[in-house]
Image (cartoon, rainbow, N blue to C red; front, side, top):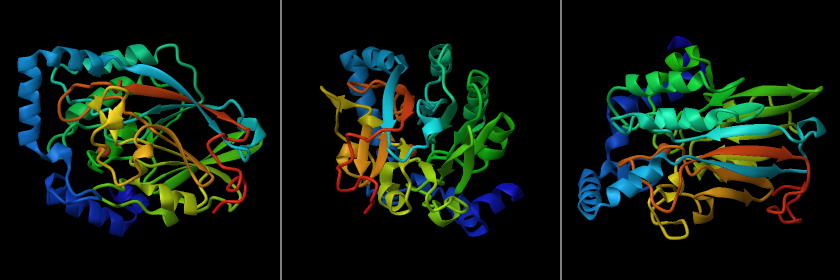
Length: 323
Ligand SMILES: [Fe+2]
């Protein structure tokens, strides 16, 4: 843990452990939003009983396990030529120990078989609860790691304790605790940075995460929540991958989210978006939280293809100039 402490920064480490110890993640009005749906057991219980008595629980559970492979294109004129066609597999919000039967692990592994990609990234929330034991989620993440190819870069979410990082790193997950790593290809470099949880623990530190990235370097940010979008764009990130919202998880027909648990614009709840000249993608999540059900919002793993071309999402006034 001493090494982890130095990597995230001693002050931020102390801040995170303080909140973890004081069970702050389970309190109302902690974090960036006023209410946290996962901290309202009465609402969970009422919704659970409604689903049970209406029979909808079976449909919701079937949807929860129906993980989709979604494809997206992340385009930027600034992308180095060598990275045109580079594929990034994106998993997020697995909350892998949510359901007692742990059936999601095998479903996910089955979906991962045969997928081709150059890099895998995970944008946080491996555990279902925000407190208590994390051994079950770590054990399930080990099974999943055996089916992920190549390097896997990850950040922690607001459901994860920092103590999970050493065990997960021994399995081959590389956590970016306000850090960055260069990815080399045919003499060109793309920098992948990751910040610690910005939602509950607020231990994200961009100064540290950007340290060493050249001013004109092409950079991709991993952030658990989209709430960092303004700072990320201001720091010059070209692309940003995040999760946390679950796309709403229980939506109205058409995928309209009722709650997204994030202090970011509604358009950043799921899928592709842009902010100034930064392209972002918010994962709908691979798992679920609270109750293992989903409605009108299927869980996903995303295959992003990076392309060196103008993005239709970026208006010309921002293109190549920035804010
Ligand atoms: Fe989260």
